[in-house]
Image 1 (spheres, one colour):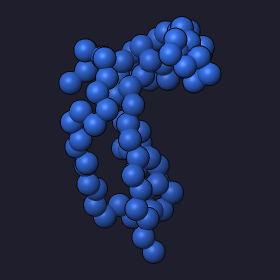
Image 2 (cartoon, helix red, strand yellow; image 1 turned 90 degrees about the horizontal axis):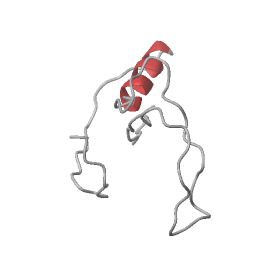
Image 3 (cartoon, rainbow, N blue to C red; image 1 turned 90 degrees about the vertical axis):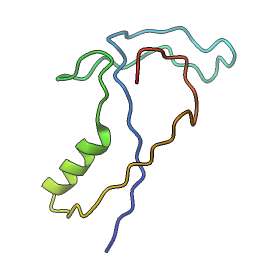
Length: 83
């Protein structure tokens, strides 16, 4: 069988745990931000796709290929300290 998986990555929160609610849409905002996971530094790229691929291999799956879908500015962010 085959498994096609499309998964994105994320950055750690930078150690902050609280933030203001979304002023434009308060129902959508979150007042809690998860702390930086153990073993990562603030603002690190988490590497979720790599971690998932390695965990699946450890579980007996075969990793035959990968495809990086690079989409610059698909949804621009106001963050200035990332590549």
